[in-house]
Length: 117
Image 1 (tube, rainbow, N blue to C red):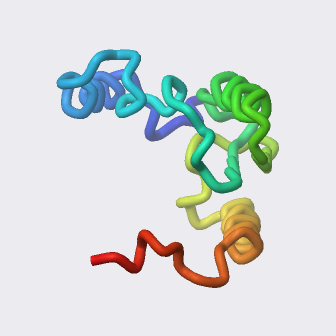
Image 2 (image 1 turned 30 degrees about the vertical axis):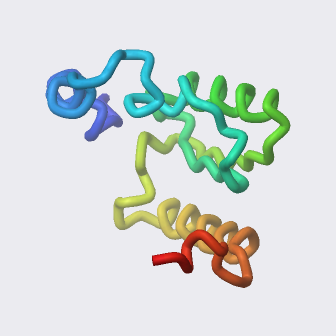
């Protein structure tokens, strides 16, 4: 049984050809894995146990933690990649977690650089 609707080989090949082609494969513009996470705010990752990228997601968690940055994980049983876009109760739960996370970590005032025009 297929669980992944968005991670099909033909779609991945098309996305790679369209998006990543102008950049080196190890560019942070292609994958955040190759960049630094030092300047990022706290990170929330919502995934599922049937997400084909879960192994990479867990490795990302280790990398971010090794840089000493906060990363929060919410793993849902039997859910696939980007399950939160579907009209299912698990998606409602995930969206609620995302909303609570954003409310908790957002800055009370805009950063100075966002006010400059």
